[in-house]
Amino acid sequence: MRTPVRLLTGTALTVVALGVFAAPTAYANEHERPEPLEIYPATASPGTTVNVHTRACGKHGHGVGDANALGAGEFQLHPSGREEVVVGEFRVPEHVRPGTYGISVACDNGKTARGDLEVARRGPSGHVPTGVGGSVGPDITQVTAGAAVLAATAVGGVWLLRRRASGAQGH
Image 1 (cartoon, rainbow, N blue to C red):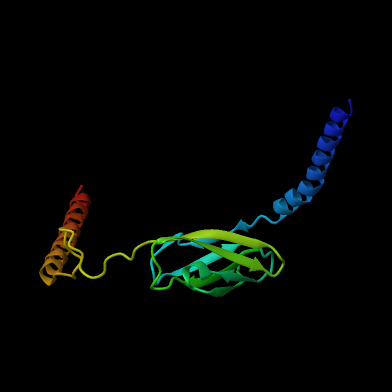
Image 2: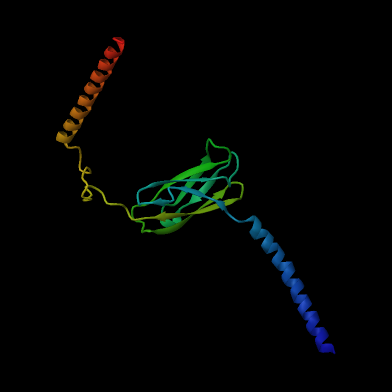
C-alpha cells in the first residue's frame, strides 16, 4: 500500500510546484504584453518615411523606437498634440527587401509597443505604358481644345440665361 501513497504524494507535490512557479510567469506575461504600435503607412516602399503612434508611453511620455530589423536603426518618440499619444518616424532604407518587419518601442515608463511594417517592392517610375495615356505630360492641343469647349459652354449658358430673363420680363 505504500507505493500508491508515494505516487499520490509525488504527484501532488509536482502539481503544487508547477502551480507556484507558473502563476508568477502567467502574471508577468499578462502585464508585460506589448501595447499596439500604429504604423502609417502599414505597407511602404524603400525610401518611404514611416510614422508610428502609440499610447503605451502615456501622457507627456517619451520612448525609443527600434527599426533595426529593416536596417533603419533607432528613432525617438515624443508627445503629440493628441492626448496620451507619442509619435516618431523613420525612413525605410533603399536596400531593404520586400517582407514583414517587426518595429518596437520602449517607453520611459517601462511599457513597450510593437507592430509590423510590410515593405513592398518600389513601384515603377517614369512613363508607365498603360495604354490609357496621360502619364507623360499634358498635350497642349488637347488642353487648348478643352479650354475652348469650356469657354463655349460658359458663353452659351450666359446667353441662355439672359434670353430667359428678358423673355420673362415681357409676360
